[in-house]
Length: 489
Image (cartoon, rainbow, N blue to C red):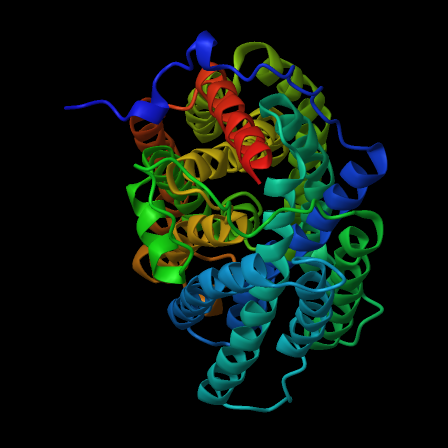
């Protein structure tokens, strides 16, 4: 096969005569403002997964399979609207920037519709509760896409160099877990005695979580100065055809090998965790505490807090290792660690000593910090690869398409997750008297499914082509192209 000329090692003789300008570093305020936005994003993404099954199944008696299906449909709806939002934010021209108007309006609507999910009237039939949840969650996920897609795109375009992108993504990797810690305690909070019942508790909890989403969602708007980027370059190599339409961008993304590898690997990872995400509370309540919801939710909250604090503490170390060895290498190492951790978890889930599960919580911070931070740092490199090929910047569209694939996977995972409880034989009316086979099947799913998905992700990602050297090479070619254009205009 004939090699693509502009992807060959960059010849020294073709280097620009003008010395390269020093790499720009982002201010602490910019990194902080962007990172705080992830506290809102992660709270909004994780809260429905944590609350929907316990509230609509345990408290209201709706079939868990139906709730899982509705969660799935919400993510499908989200996945199909996100690419359009990304494309529109790439094209937006306003005095406030391309991303900030979407982030400001989207964060407000996300907070509003999240609170609305839990404001259902009392005394409805299960079918009416299903209808209420379907409508309110659809509005919520539409608003979340309008907020989160431009926020991700803002981060992909802020930093210009390979390592500066890793440093930037360390901030959302630190603050995102704070939002997840909040989520981990939401159900526990609904069970407090100062509420009349769970329904009153979830209503106030939903309002409080919405306020958090709005407050931290506005931080990127207030503290970050968007990087000014033209929507398309004016001149590109003859072999690179410039296409800026929505469908041309989708086609370019599908043909982009680094994008495909990264997206498929992350989709497998997120599917593995999403399949058992809602199952965790059931394992802690019924497998480890015999149906005691207060004790189980306390363990779940503690588990979530520990693994997320561990993730925050591990982020600086993972960042340093990535700067030394490269993003791809540390990403693969984190996946191997994840497989080992899930095998260990099987032996830690014992009713005699339920708190042993917290050992796994502490160990999970390593892979959680690496996987989620490095994925987003690598998307920015993928966007450089696309610009070299096609002559246009489209972080919003690429970030949204990346989200489209893994959100579609999440949707399927949610649909299956609810029915896993049904197939395992779980019956909410039995309380702590679930059968031994039901408890065993829940444990097998909780440990085994993520391990298998992590192994599959390793197999896919092993051939990811964008090393540090190649990424730096692409950046130099883009700079040379820009200098050449400035000289001829």
